[in-house]
Image (cartoon, rainbow, N blue to C red):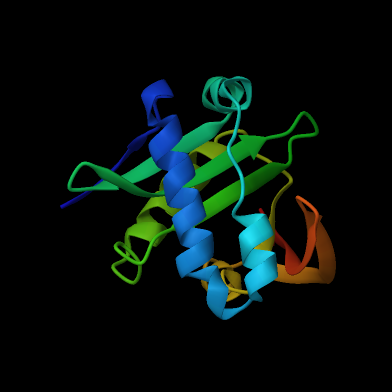
Length: 158
């Protein structure tokens, strides 16, 4: 059974692990080995994690007591909503849970009546975001932790 719930402080290590596994196991079909190695080499500090939980919208997806994905949303001071991260491992992909988690975060973002919602999405996530109604406004080369990867800057006008 898969549970979608708000992230907690004690989820930091497991969420970070799911993030790395998602990049290595899912995004590897769209990016080269060096890009995946550098991109997935991330460990967020306690301060960043605590700030995200305190100020943002953060859900984890748990299967058999293991965090297998997360979605992180934010409302910016200019009233723009943003999906900051959406990462799932193969253990939960293709079962509709991404859509459910996405809808939970969007519901919270839309309460703020944003002018738009933005995402900087990977090639891997592009079909999902398009299915959620987002439109590509720019394809660019983004520097993530010292490696350049192609990303899609996307918007949903609300």
